[in-house]
Length: 229
Image (tube, rainbow, N blue to C red; front, top):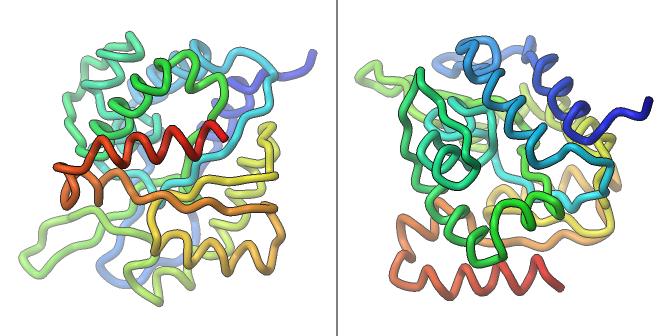
């Protein structure tokens, strides 16, 4: 029996582990190991929306945030939107994440979750949450490119992850990259690895919600235009 897209993603997530080095004060959080319910809701999500063998286009984030996919196991999806739009309730956590707000507003205008997820697969080149300890000892979200040493440590894991994502059944003729700085790093990787023929860069949802919220509709229109062409 040929595995469905859902089965491949679930298996990828269940086997995720980062064993490489990390610079001082950085940590990697694996939601699939830390909360048993994450595995349950993640499985439910993919079985609901990806239970087929359709080829999909790839939307690439940076790395999961600890309040979004770092809890639900579903990229750009906090517990609130997982329940509201995807009909999947998580009882062990309640999270609200601003990138998720933009993403689901855009998905609604695109035509809703079923239409959107039947055409697109979202994940990250570093598919686990990265946190960094600040001077006062708090752990905050970090991006894989925030620190040169960190990027050096994780680059080969990222390349391997992208290969694994593509093998799920992704269309590599065009990839959509969220965030300009993310795109700079991924373009360099793509020059070496030739993963994708065309890279289309979109502003990151967090940036839009944080700095451009008055122009949010313009960005939603831009996303839909690019994703639909």
